[in-house]
Image (tube, rainbow, N blue to C red; front, side, top):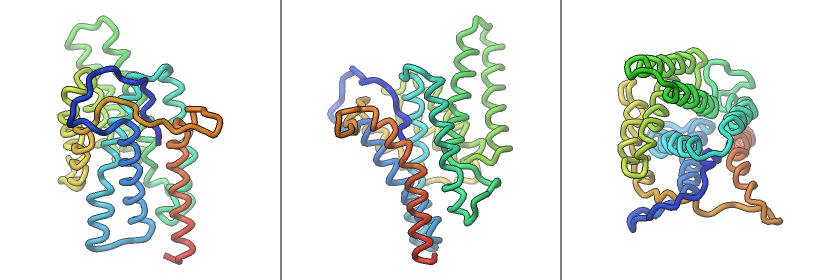
Length: 254
């Protein structure tokens, strides 16, 4: 999923910061495949702990980080939001197959959570851009976050209200993101663990985030040199890898 639509940063890259946005997307995708494979193949015991509860929990904070970077640097936030929601719809049936059914209303895929996060970002930004006094502004921003959290919970989106709070943390840290990026990730991961710390593995995302250097990094191109291939390749990867895992699980009669 290519949620990072920002232009190349021009800030200084510190020696210890070696990972680009492209690298973070690859790490997030590997983590996501690990988690979904554990679910499709019904892993248990140590295998489930490693592939789902540890490695598999790294993906969501990284996607939240990249989504927030994308929001603040995209040229057209409405198209960005529409694209995320479109692929959320396309991924829903493949996602449902992970739970053994074409239709599974009890749990919606992660891209819906991220799409709702983009809507929340726009609403919060609209409040902040109006000339409200500090107290009414704070109240309205809190109301937006609470409303989106409630919607995520009611719609059974992945990570529910905790995912929305995680996204809100990344949003509010964005102004100092490169200086405070590990703080943003820590607070975001803490939000994901408000339900009895059952996503502790998410804190491992702080490592790649700490190593992020602010650059886009390598860009995928087509045979004709079109950079737009990268934008859609990561989006397509989400439903495609779910379909592939479903097919493999079916062939193996898992």
